[in-house]
Figure 1 (cartoon, rainbow, N blue to C red):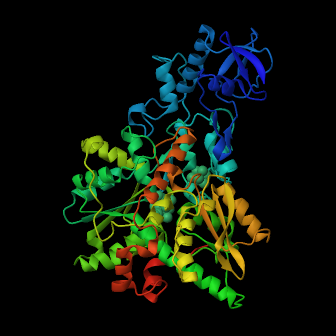
Figure 2 (cartoon, helix red, strand yellow):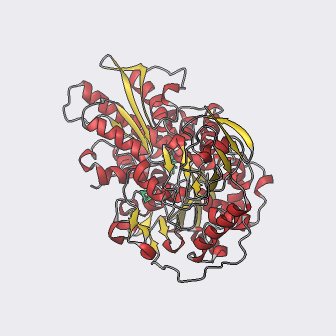
Figure 3 (cartoon, rainbow, N blue to C red):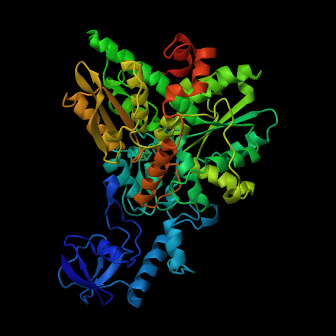
Length: 582
Ligand code: HC1
Ligand code: SF4
């Protein structure tokens, strides 16, 4: 450790930490903007470009960016002199001089880190008036780039290239023309972007944001010719509350159902039901592949990859086209749900599919893109008509004027409102494969599984490999791989391709933490504790469920008895499986 002084206070701190980190652990706040460090995500944006965090060191005239200057023995640091405050104000004014002033109508208003600093430093006029750079708006089904608002902090670039290894965003042009953009200034839709939305999650301003469909939702709810159906993803329920003052991880399902009904949804169903359905198909597929493998079938493909994350699916389509025969062909729960609604439930209700309007509420931006894929529509009518994020739902609730905090709990509607705990954990990393293992164990061994908690599959390391000794294949335990974050996915896939790892099943989720850390969730502003609490919240929901195995969901059994026959039946294939495109 070294001894330093910050603003006259003596502090002992580990060597090799930055002044910013040393100050933070001593409870001293130094404002910063471009800097972001989320250790658990292996994410550090340390380009030191904004200079808001400069400090005085040992009385020198030169100022040092505290985000990249390391502490050393005896250092005397000042973080808050009148000169520093004036310099920070000037930097903010310079940034604002080339920034649109339409904060009131900006998608990030209220969450914008630049706006927050401008407020804290009481910027009331901008001394440096001049030209402003203008770019075209890049619109896609999921993400909008409004580069006029970009402050060149490079956070998105770091996220996309270093954490997600998608290499879509980088700096182009020079000087006043400089911008963060896809190469050749392509539209994001024409690149390898997976729409994971993680760049949006770290953008401090409104330069990157989701395509907002709240108005389309309002219109559908007001249209008397439409029967509106909501389906809500597992991870939404433990994060939505954050927008209304609840602790991260609080399960607000009951209030959410209540408010959606008050807002006019005719039916409020649970995507979790379809997560159970996904397990029926994926576990059956895993069992079949393992049986074929044991029978010596050389063509059988193992490991089986889970396929419910659309950003991950797009990633493998772009980057590993030769491996497209290993993902499960099961559609994601979002898409299974919408197929069942439009092709089975609508008929049972005496409705035409065009009369039913399905709105999915997802923690994810890639779900908007998934819903728009051609294979998920019939005669121009989409299976999932709209997909909105947790943030958009929070906005809709705020607009509706209902007092969310005090609403009573109301259960989901049936028949698609009951789910097992296995479905809840879909929302966190490792959950889909744990859910599949619970069911596959019983189907493969023919015995009942007493302890459903496969704790070896849990955790937050980017790549995890675990064995399930209870379930042996050819005398060796079932070997499972788990990756979250697309960079970790790449690491795992490379090992499989090189033959370094031999696994039976793999779960991949594009976002760190799984869907709980999705690009459509309330902003975490770099605080991974929030994601950890959502993780614990979702686990608690599973722990408290009476039914914790997907195949024990009584409504799932009924759906197979009445409509689908067996998992992997002809009908199940028609409605619940899909294809991938290189
Ligand atoms: Fe997910 Fe899924 S778990 S992909 O993370 O399989 O978005 O929550 O809805 O479809 O169920 C997301 C979450 C979600 C699907 C399910
Ligand atoms: Fe990169 Fe994901 Fe952003 Fe696309 S959505 S640009 S893949 S970080």
